[in-house]
Image 1: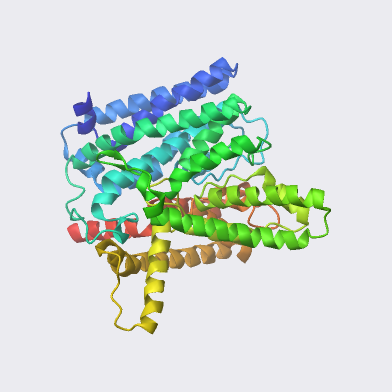
Image 2 (image 1 turned 45 degrees about the vertical axis):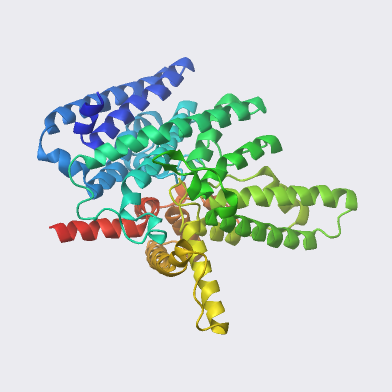
Length: 499
């Protein structure tokens, strides 16, 4: 069975898996009494599984298999064509939802962006939201597997910061069936802990009083850092449930929690540069925001000020971690903090946190904390050289590599990211958006932080309020943000060089 899957092109396997996954919301809909919804998912799932079987038979043993398993066609098929298959039942279920809108919805979910066109609609079946959450969860699983199996050996996807050079030449890394073998091996390694932690968070949230369906959606949204929920915001789930979600988001910060050949590395916070950078950023954000609101709320009575201050600290800590991991879930105490001080929340700070992003080899988007740490390390070294021109960077080979080659690679990524962001904002403005609106939507798409549009501006911005052209542009921006621009540039250049 495993050998047969290896001989089948990876996009075809993903297509069949998508069809099989549709049986879950189909069963949920039938059990909930929504038979038309269940039939739409059932028929779409059967169709996709049959189509995948026919394609597997047609491509087995031919050159098409090797071409489909090459990295660039693989990523193109996965992020452009697979969402089209995922969108099939939504067109039948949601009244007035066009296929292009359903495709955008699935791209936003599969890239773990969490943008949605269903935000202003009411009466959407729970099974539809379950499918959205599952697609985002599978999207997080896919990027974890793909980064470790395909990009890490090439020194891409953030690993260029800590590698002397790529271990596998890019021109030969996507040849033959090796891609399928590496993906299967990494999938077997990542799935058990990913699934187990999701189930654990779901059980903990349910034990704390969160309804079962809501708890499942929140658990999947936290582990995939997608923020895909049945409604806008977490709602009043209580501090205990928020604390569970806070802990569930922590793995999206650390490179040392990634799966490796011998399993997950031991958690070592003191030696983890990504965790150190995240702690500094979150503490700085808490101090800035809390001091800002303390000054505004200084006239409150003492018995009201201290509880409000505690809620403000927790609200900023939760939101800081949520947006730093590009999840976008908002604490209930964020609104409490605003009511206490009378000030509007500083959405620009959340935009900055989302831009920095989470850890390498995680489900988080953004520039990534390891790159931020490398550039900060280089800045410190350069300042020290102003005093000691003959300074030799200490700390061992890895520290020197991080402050030199790693920092230059990180700076290249930041510059490319900035150029793409400026181009995206300019294009959105040409399509009729105001500068602030275009900036927020552009950053939300590139950092895969869809809920950012709800809190970054004075008033919430709706994805459903965009025109078709702007949505298409932002959908491609989500894919760019998910795969990282440098990865696509490297793969395209390798393809051109091969030809």
